[in-house]
Length: 140
Image (tube, rainbow, N blue to C red; front, side, top):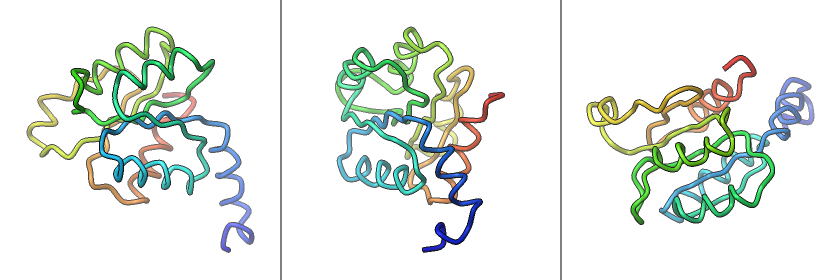
């Protein structure tokens, strides 16, 4: 395996393992793929299928570094509303919003405030890697 030979890859995974990510996605397959890719990158993950279950998790945990959430979800709570509620407990929470909407609709919707990034679905591992690294930078 390449990471066993490459100290840079090992260092990146070790650094990433310090971060816990809450993945919120209503589509089970998309959620499974997202969680799987984040684990491949070395992140610790929790998962929820909608905003309500994510809020329950957020109330139970001491620390979360990043909220990785779909924008449009069933159940009456959008990713934006979830982010707003989550920031009440974790004011400096970093957020990656995901969406399959076209660019024009996303531009109108996306005004998520500080420490937020947007990742369009479907995404590739390299795009995910870049967005996660940008979102989790200390100076963000």
